[in-house]
Image (tube, rainbow, N blue to C red; front, side, top):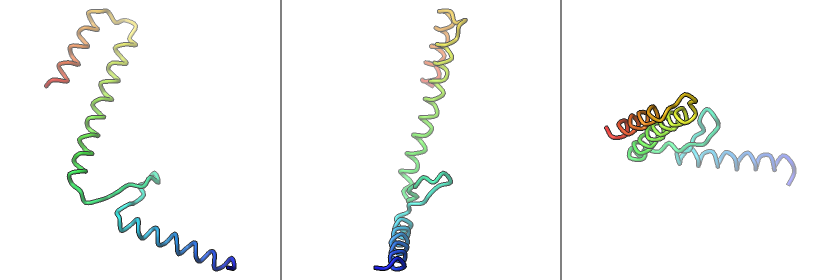
Amino acid sequence: MNPFEMVVAIIVIVTIGSVIKARLGIHKDSNGNERYHGADPVAAADAARLRDEVRALKERVQVLERVITDSETTSLRLDREIEALRDKQNP
């Protein structure tokens, strides 16, 4: 096999792989990560719910970090912060 044939074979293999990935719904985002873009609304709703839950948990961690690292925190203020978090968790 000469070098020209090898280059053509590599291009054909890569093209076939790209076509198969496109048919399966796998596309690259702006960061170069491959993502599945299927037509499953249940999975999309579940993913959105999980993103919201992770966002809420990150906010709670930030509040807890602020409460713990605050040098002026007294036990009374800490109790109020904890109660406020409990109230926020149970709407």
